[in-house]
Structures are given as structure tokens and as C-alpha cells.
Amino acid sequence: MELGTLDTAPRRGRHIGRWILLALVVLGGAGWAAYRYRSWRRFTATPAAASRPVGRVVPESLHVRVEVLNATGTRGLARQAMFAMRDAGFDVVSYGNSSEPQDSSLVLDRSGHADWAALAVRALGAARAEARPDTSRYLDLTILIGRRWTPPGEPLHP
Image 1 (spheres, rainbow, N blue to C red):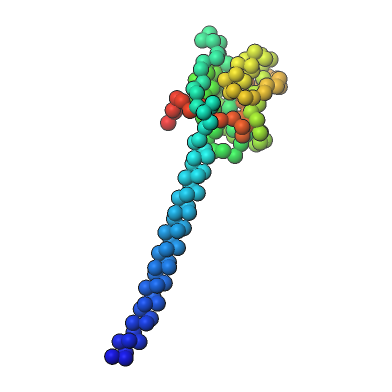
Image 2 (cartoon, helix red, strand yellow):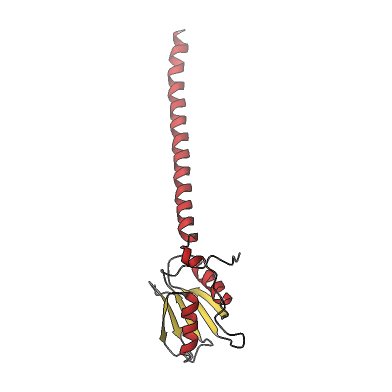
């Protein structure tokens, strides 16, 4: 009988160790899920003012070629801005990332049409425009999306 008593003590220690390991795994998984949920909410949450869809600002007869560049660390923002600018009537010919970070959005007038840059500023909501002519590009505007820009809530583009 004494041998049976000695055998149960190490087993109990193993069971406690397994429960501790299981608790650590569950807590780690819950922490990871909370972190991912918070980062997802921060990415998808938009203020009430930004949830309105962008209306068409470019006349049907006008074709303004635009390049949209993400100047933030937020992934996928250039794609969302591309859809918003297309909804506003711009011809977005390319989108991607910028190497220079921007706090606020900037519209660069490449073709000398300040009125087209003003249309883009109106479509973005809060941005500033600068004239930086560049005849080597097949573009009218370059839009650098800054950290302060919030994408519109509608329409949803998968």
C-alpha cells in the first residue's frame, strides 16, 4: 500500500502542470484574439461623418487620370481610397504605397489643372493641394493618402 501512495504524488504533480499549461495556452489565445480584434476595429471603424458615401464630383464628360498612394502604415488604405475616388468619378490608373509618410492627405497637380485638384480635395474631404507639374507621367493628379483620412463607409467593395 505504501507504494501506491508514493505513485499518486508524482501523478498529481503532472496533472497540475498540465492544467497550468492549458490555462497559459487559453490565456495566450484569448490575448491574441483580443489584440487582433482591437486592431481590426481600429482599421474598420470610421467616424459618423466619414460613413457617408462619396458622391460623384467629376462631370461625366471629364476624364481625370489619378494615381493614389498610401502614405501611412495602414494596410489597404490606398485600395479603399481608389474605390472612393472611382466613386467620385476619377479614373484611377494605379494605386500603391508611398515611401514618404504623410500626416494629412495631399493632392499633387501634375498637369496644371488646379480645378481638377480642387475636385479631388472635395472628394477626399480633408486634404490640401499643391502644384507639382510633371510631364513625364501619364497622370493628372497624384493623391497621397495621409493618416487623418478616413474611408467612407459605403458602398462596400469586396
